[in-house]
Each structure stands twice: as structure tokens, then as C-alpha cells.
Length: 363
Ligand code: HEM
Image 1 (tube, rainbow, N blue to C red):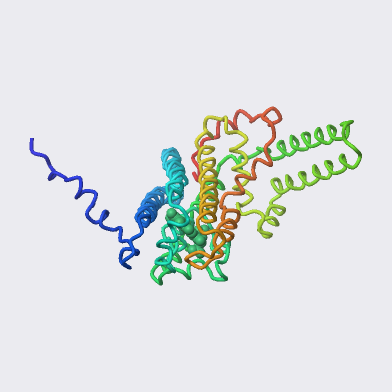
Image 2 (image 1 turned 30 degrees about the horizontal axis):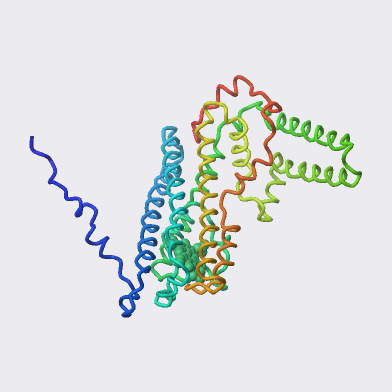
């Protein structure tokens, strides 16, 4: 039987001629070839390929979630693809170890040839950050300049366009807001939950008051801490308190979406909530792994260049360490653990509510 397609040659399919002739050592061009510059280039190129794959996965999940109604079948596919991002991120973190086989002195053999290029100009890295949900106003200034001033005008335009489209954060927030169980008639879940929380806090206060090993001052401190917890809980129940937190920059996720995410976390044992819960956990995993990469990269940079400024002109280690703390996207989901109460204290779901807990969000 004739094959419908012409035979494919491995090297052509992968365009290896182009790929493998794309490592041009600046040190060699300058007449002082530095052995480790090859590793430096290959590592960066490998990163860029993985960034491309991450964008491919995130872009497809965005397409699924941008629709008015998210097809239930797509939730599993989205989780699967985001899990792939998680696995890639683990490789990205590990890859730094290969780069660290280059010593700081080896790096100095070619570092001067790189100015003012820097990983800071990686447009794909910025696209990943933006698609995931990092907001422009959240970014730390780099030498008093916005991050995109360091890339070419074409790249600036691309980044701007991407910032204007919706991110994974936006679409997941909207998906959460559309969860049907939040507005079922006569379903006073939040009142039940509030009662359960109050009972738990009352119990905690009794434990503190009757603890003979604590001094009066220690008791007072712990009771004040419980008062503060009660205030934090109030924001879960009252939309205006939550709005105040949003206005003061302490929260980002809307009140309705936060309640939905909390509900999913609390009742994740319900079979129908398994996938939504996996989705939320995977977003948290991705966020944490970005933070881990940022911090790990910062440590590597410290080791490589000490406290010198970067080739791109930033304060180097200190700038990078701060991005690890500030460039997080899903802290609202991570903070949800504050509001969890033990399974045993959870209000039982009414059977009809349980029956209606389909995840046809947006229907
Ligand atoms: C010897 C190895 C490396 C050194 C010394 C180094 C150093 C730095 C420094 C100092 C910065 C801050 C900007 C600047 O002033 O230049 C930076 C940013 C960055 N680097 Fe590296 N880097 C190295 C390897 C890598 C690798 C392998 C990647 C992978 C793509 C990478 C990606 C980035 C990214 C994405 C940023 C921007 C981070 C942000 O703004 O949040 N770097 N790097």
C-alpha cells in the first residue's frame, strides 16, 4: 500500500541544521574562545524551548476557559496540561544545577562580551508571567524603569498586547464566580459555615483561657490573635469587608470567586469537586514552582556574580530575591488554608444541594 505522505528524515523534521548551528560564541568571535560559553548558550536556548512549550499549554487552557461555558470534558484536559507545566518547571529548576558546573571564574572568561543582554529581556518568560496572571502594576521597578523598557519596540508592543488580553487568573476567577451552588435558593451554606467557625473560635478561646501553663500576658496575646482571626474570617462572609481588602491590595480574587474556591477546598471529597480542586491545586503548584525558580535563580546569581550588578544593570541578587517574594499570582488561593475548618466541624450538605453539585459552570 502506498504511503499517503512522503518519508520524513529525522534531521529535517527537527530542523537540526538550524537548531545546531545557532550557538555562536561571542568569546570566539572576539578571538578568545571561552569553553563554558557553549554551556551558557545551550542552557538558555533549552529554557526558551521549554518556555515555548509552557506558552503552548497555557494558551490552550486559556482558550478553553475564555468561553462563556467551560465544557466539562475540558476541565480534565486543562488539569492534565497544567500538570505538564508543573513537570517542566521542575526540570527548569534542576537545569540550574547543570549551569552551576560553570564556576564564577569560568563565567568571567566571557561575561564582558554579553553586556547589556540579560535573561531580563526574555520575552517568552514575560509572556508566561503575563498569561499566568502577573499584573504590570504588581511588578517591581527595575532600576526605576518598567520591565518592558529593556526590550525592543516590537517586543514591547507584543507584551502590551498580551497584557491587554485576559490571563489565566481572570478566566479562572470568572469560572469560579459562575459555580452554580453559590446561588441556589434557600441554600444558607455561608450562615452554617459562619456558625461552625464561631463554634470553633469559641472552643479555641476556651482552650486558651483554661490553659494553666500560660501566663495572663500570654493568654491575652493568644486571645488577641484569635480576635484577629475572627476579623479575617469576617471578610469571607461579608462582601464589603472583602472589597476593603481588595482596595488595600491585600486580596485580588473577587469575593464570590473566593467563596467558590473555599467551598471547593472544603468539599473536595465530593466526587464532582475532585477535578475543580485539582485545577486549583495545580495553579498553586505552578505559582510555587515559579517562586522556587526565582529564588533558586537568585541564589545561583549570588554565587556566580556576588553582589555585582547584572549584565542588564539591575542590583542583581537583591532585585531577583525581591521578585521571588512579590511576583506571586495565586496567594489568595494559598491563603485559603486560613479559613479551613476541620472536616468534622463542616456543615453537612443538604441532599438536594449535593445532587445539584454538577460542575457545569456557567450554565
Ligand atoms: C551565569 C548565569 C546567570 C546569571 C549570572 C544571571 C544573572 C541575572 C541577573 C543579574 C538578572 C537581573 C537582571 C540584570 O541585571 O541582568 C537576571 C534576570 C533574569 N534571568 Fe538570569 N542569570 C543567569 C542565568 C539565567 C538562565 C539560565 C536563565 C534562563 C532563561 C535566566 C533567566 C533570567 C530571567 C527570566 C530574568 C528576569 C527575572 C525577573 O525579572 O524576574 N538567567 N539574571
